[in-house]
Length: 265
Image 1: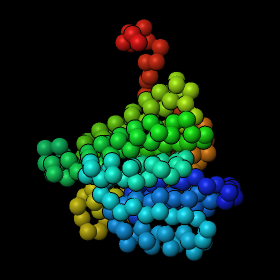
Image 2: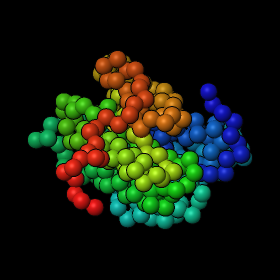
Image 3: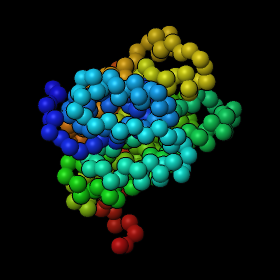
């Protein structure tokens, strides 16, 4: 159930907000009354989203930042531009996939994917945690994939990148808890979702989710799952790729927090 929290003056940052999951997530956080900082490469799409939101919620402040986060200097530049806002939630959603064998994959595309899916996410997460870890009710949500917990055929490199996102975010969650920080770090792991992902991952102009997957979620459904994760005290929001049920979970990877074989501090 959505709550009326229009008194909130804080901001939610959403990367990759011009389409798909990011677009729908912006709308559900707007309904919650959160001011928004929306980033993506396509400024025209961001403008459309801003107008759609302001038509319904005219008192919100919607800040747009058009930038390509696969370029390292843009990542640091974005953070410098937004860190002075009273940030409370940061959602790293920007990313894309690739379907191809390792032996045939386009390495230029793979390099760009790793810069965006791994490097940009790590940098923005680190900077946000550094400055806002002791902010009351602060949350970092990184969008991974069920392919960040299960290796999918013909998507090995993409899955490896998402395994990184899942492990990094789960590890960060442990780190924040151990330090008694106020911030929570969480990871959302969707399965097949009807977005532009299929076209980009396969380098095609059209992609038929009904024919090629049959079962999938809409972006709006995933945004609702993300909100469920946001409202919970769990670390992982995971879609079961076999039956497409959504589960709120504790961290899935083993954590050697109390091992006697850890480096002595």
